[in-house]
Length: 301
Image 1 (tube, rainbow, N blue to C red):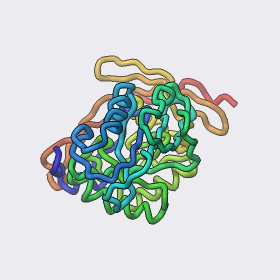
Image 2 (image 1 turned 135 degrees about the horizontal axis):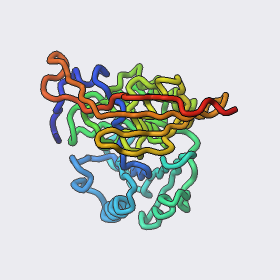
Image 3 (image 1 turned 180 degrees about the horizontal axis):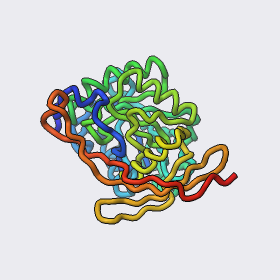
Image 4 (image 1 turned 90 degrees about the horizontal axis):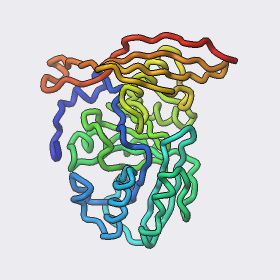
């Protein structure tokens, strides 16, 4: 709901489950620096025609566009268009940065083919996005803005405020790029722990929503294998295959550990978290439960 906080504050404390809720469609990213103001939806924002055409082109190609701005900065600035592009797909996600006098010069076709566009330079440090999109949902600003300021103080130059990332109910939302790792219901302590873990190539399972760009049941299966094995390395757990059987999803998950690789059969089912009245009487939360987890092959060294 735009311009309002649908969910009582208690829903954002981490008591409700957040797993398997990362945005499914975000495999490629286009981040455009635009200080604002931000309307409730991107197509309602007052943007230069060339920038709007770039967003339309990105959307048509399946690239997720986001407006970003430095914490506390609200006034526009002239000069070339500043963008980041990122690929969260594949085993080696990457991010690149560029500045363009003419947005038409940004080769988004290269991006969706996994190639760094010309005039963009690979970025070696992660980028952290905090949703502060007040016009989309007031909770994102009320909870997200203080978090963005805090993280910016701890990790100067790596933190950006951003428009809607999906899942207002999970505010404050944090996205770690280029891998597209989503965290929700973040406190300051949880956010800096997640950010520091990501900088070292790891995830923190507490308040981890999942990795963007893969189906929610697969996100759940990866989460349960991580919980079972204790594996935190970002790239060490991945769904090899999956099939649906009614509401149930059967996944084969590969765990690549330092001591060898294992494969697990993981069965997940949709579930509902019934929020206690003291937490949020108004709305239950959809999630997933683990129905089965079994080792298919022992570690192969």
